[in-house]
Image (cartoon, rainbow, N blue to C red; front, top):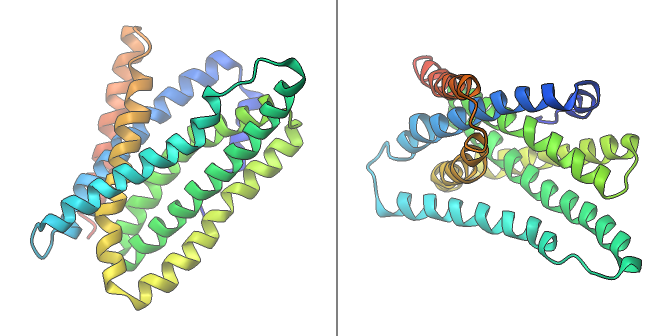
Length: 238
């Protein structure tokens, strides 16, 4: 559904400097698309019958959930053992933890994408695009973590792809539950918006502020605006 098996190949074929430039453009585009989808598609759909307190609370729940998920994934990063004989075990365990966390993230992505298509085709397309743009740098980062954890390039690609396919399971569950429960869809909209706002604001935007190159910054701003404009353009299809 949202699996991007070529990202590992991309990270192997491009030089690191070129890869960094491409990734930051994608990160900018992704941030704009996530914000755009949240504020142009998801929240307006959720508030169609009136903006109730429940919408705000579910949006905050989405932010808190993704914050907690990120904490779980990165918790082990701050607990590296000093002893050399346990260091390799820790590094390998880090790869496993990364796969589990990424699998859970992918499952939620599947739920989100399936639920968005049950609302309308344009909302589904907008959400799919936003998720895919976000997943390109995410999957490349996960591929790098697996290599660091001692996986061979072939195994890292395989397990990264396997983790991504969990989105299909999430999509099936999301479609089955959403098709039989309107309340699920109504809750999923602001929850997803909160998750997208958190990812774009806490993960993607800070990455774009690390460099000071003026030309690169211009490209980042333009890509960010293009991401928002793309979501706005899809709104007119509805």
